[in-house]
Image (cartoon, rainbow, N blue to C red; front, top):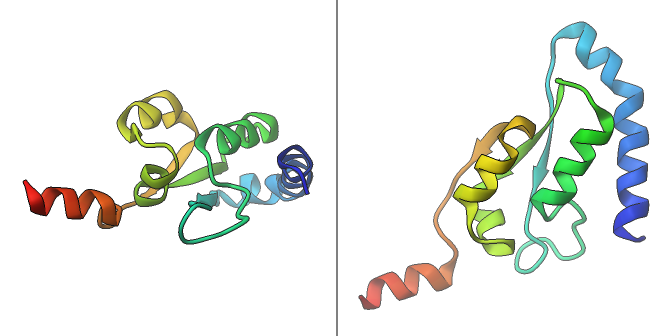
Length: 108
């Protein structure tokens, strides 16, 4: 399935359930994960894709779970990305930095 088709499907599904979330005051978050190392073929693997999903669903109750580890693997420059997309982020996960970064830090 293409990224566009997956985005369209996610928008359709979340649009159907957003009135329930809005009525109940519940925020639904979609976790951004990396597809390079840990989750091959995972579609929600870039902030831009997730932000577009949030824009299209257009609900304050549909947000992203921004996983800092995974987005560092996929995109790098996480601080700038967070600042540019903070309105779409409902929750953060954080963990150790990617292995390449840790090994470089030990050598220094």
